[in-house]
Length: 315
Image 1 (cartoon, rainbow, N blue to C red):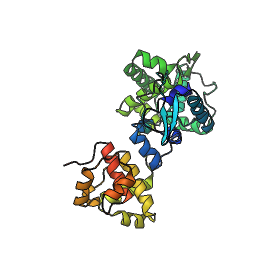
Image 2 (tube, rainbow, N blue to C red):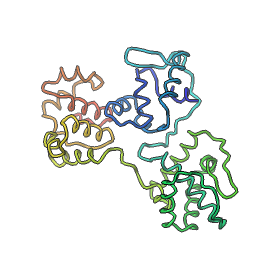
Image 3 (spheres, rainbow, N blue to C red):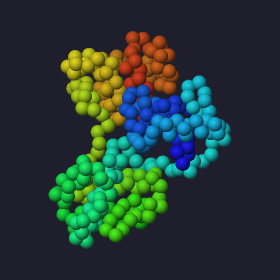
Image 4 (tube, rainbow, N blue to C red):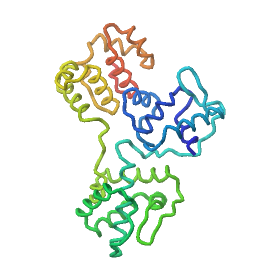
């Protein structure tokens, strides 16, 4: 199962195995994120945070031994004998959902509501995580049982019978234990679809349980971005935040990967903008540095990111 799952992150374009592992486990360095953007895999950030390095490497080694993956100079590519994987990636998943954290809260909340509807106060919680239990106790003080149950029924109706069945297959309630017949990726897909509905503004009780979209950047990244958007230079931002210029650059580029806008006329001289518009953004950054006079890594990488996203202002 893990072999089939990992195989989907490789194709005929070289991909470094370590970069895939760090993406799946949620490492948000610029190099990991840029590689994911290049391979159209940014959506899968933090998809598998519990994946151990040992299990990952064992699966990669097995795929190499079976020639389903092939070593080339710049990484790994899918072999000629690549078969259709048996695992469907949960395409409703988004990194900002915080799915894994919500899953445990959702299961405990369903159990609490189920037991409460039968006036049963003595039961074994589905999790022994004390901190999580405390979070749910606080949430419990804010909800009306009947309202929360009614909201959940509406959410399940919005998912449809098949998805609702998959979602409930993993829960435990009063004299009820889910079938568990669906695999973890099917359940993750169902949970992601549930969060997508909650994100639209439905079900206030469950919105409070979820807690809203999770920030993908750090507080310092947002401060740096805000300064640049308000007219500061990168050098000024570095001084004010007492950070290295290279750190500011990484913060800004990371923010752009996640969709932020930068004031490009403030960053690029007009001549450089024209020159960049005439080159191939897929060219190695060192080659572009040599081709574009007076450019630096930040300017080149920003151009490449915006081009990959279709946001570079041609013309």
